[in-house]
Image (cartoon, rainbow over the protein chains, first blue to last red):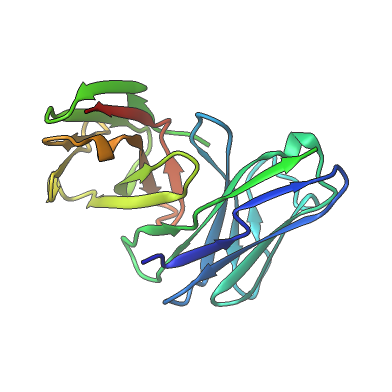
Length: 116
Length: 112
C-alpha cells in the first residue's frame, strides 16, 4: 500500500487563491521531504527540500515567498502556493525518505493544480 | 537541475519483447535509482543500485551501472501491456546522498 499520502489530488481555483497541499508519510517518520513540480511530458524538477523543525531549502529560481513550505511534524509537510496565477498551474509531487543511506524516495500521487 | 539524459525518449514495442532504456549522468554518485510513473500519478520506486554495484535484478527488471562511463541501463524482459509508463532514472549525488536528480525519462508503450 501507499506509504506517502498526498492531498488533494486535484485543485481547480480562481487566480489569486492560495492553495495548500499536504504530504504525509504514513508508516515512517520523515525528517526530510521533497517537493517537485512536473510539467506535461517532462521530468520532475526539485523545488525544495522540506526539513522537519527548520526552514526549507529552496532550489535556485524557486520563490520561497510564493511557495511556502511547513514541516511541523515528522509525518507532515505542507506546500502552500500563495496567490496562485495561471502560470502556477502544474503537477506538484511530494516524496519522503526514511533515514539512513541508500534509501529510495516514496512518492505521493501528486496534485494537479489548475488556476483559472 | 537535470543531470540525467535518458534514451530513447520514447520506445514502442510489442508485448513479450524486451525493453532497454539507458541513462547517463555527469557527477559522482552514491546510488542510482529507477522509477516508474503512470500517467497523472506519482512515481513508484523500482530498483536502487549502489555506486559499488554493477548489476542488480528484481523480477523482470535488470539494471546495470557503469560508473566509469557514468551510465546505467534498465532492461524489462518479457514486457506486458501493463508496463506502459514513463521510466525515470535518478541519481543521488555523493555530496547530497538523499536528494535526487532526475533524468529526462523514457516513455515506454507496450502494444498488446
